[in-house]
Length: 380
Image (cartoon, rainbow, N blue to C red; front, top):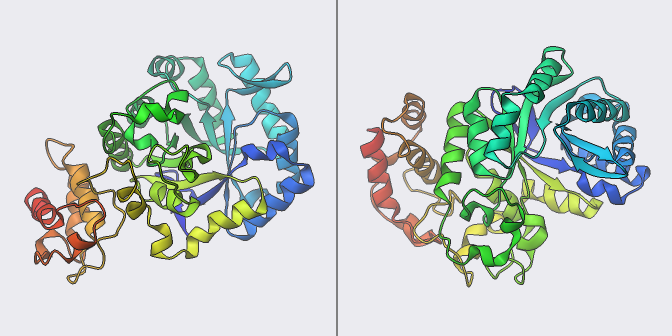
């Protein structure tokens, strides 16, 4: 298992994490078996957004005696009312639910205290300026949560969070389908196939979000990496062709600022399918060729940082050069941090000999040689 830091938190997490929502279907013994097996594979981050008391207790049973192994994302605002999950900003109910989470997990602290499910910019402003955020800050000051995060499906909200100076990391929905869509506070639209009729390429708002997170060192953990499983079936995929779990994982982990993708596990088999990513071949990870040959896709001429262009005879990490260039082009003046990153590369755009071997391998027809010259103009 490989590990990455979550932004500036200093926490090192497995690049594949445990999304625990499907544990609602399982007994405490089954939950323990899955959590133990995930831990044996090196997975060390677990997201618990669910308010169901039984699920929380089952997770607590599973991690008892092994709490220190797990970096836990626990949510503020996910409550259990009248026998069902309810998202709320009523602070007294939030406090009761969060104390319940601590008690049932058998812990005195939560590593990542997540402000739960904020998809409206107006709601974000209300939270960040009000007593909800003040409560989260008090929890952090008292050591009950170690870092303050926020969960959202809306890139406009995520951008506000990343620029606020008050949110340390973000839980965000990332997959190659969602990345084509503009900001929206209606989650259902992301799953509707007809939404994708006239879109093309990665939405600029999402590219900007990744750039802002990378530059501000705001780490991202990923939810909805499989689009609820819809990307596995040609009938439900907006590309009209299926992707595999490994391909979806690779897509998410190649986005800037991403630390971990949280996979929803419903069985030991699901865990094994996900951790196979760690020893998968480049062919198995290759989402780019699948999308390029799909009946529908909108990535022509656009670098998705898939790495298909490698190897370069001069040793250039072409995907990284393109990623740095794309980040730089979003500024009027290139940040010194990007210049420094570019300059210390063992080989960069200035080393390109225009052999164009990379272009023959690019699934999306990117004019790589021109992009290397462009990078040198930007950074040189």
